[in-house]
Image: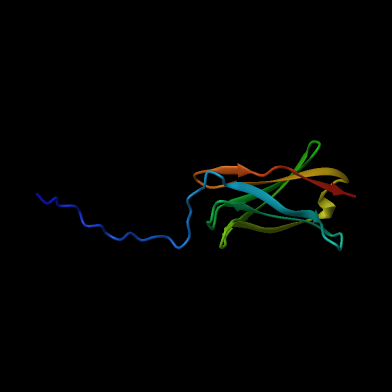
Length: 120
């Protein structure tokens, strides 16, 4: 006896996958003082995830001081880029700092390992 199966209806697929991977990781790729000495630059990305518009937050900490700057993530071919953030070096006290990247969307929040940063 034949079975009547529902017809499959093609579903619209987004052009970019927003599904988090179980191995999504936030990674800082650059952290340092620009060659002209005027800005601290930091950039990063989220591996295992490709989406646009969610929050990338860079957090700089030293002793009892914290500075933050955020950007929107931007999908690229293999991950989610958090772009480049620049902050005036004059806003940082001299000494050792750590910077982390936290990426947050409705399904996950991932934070990078801290990256050391020395401000002269």
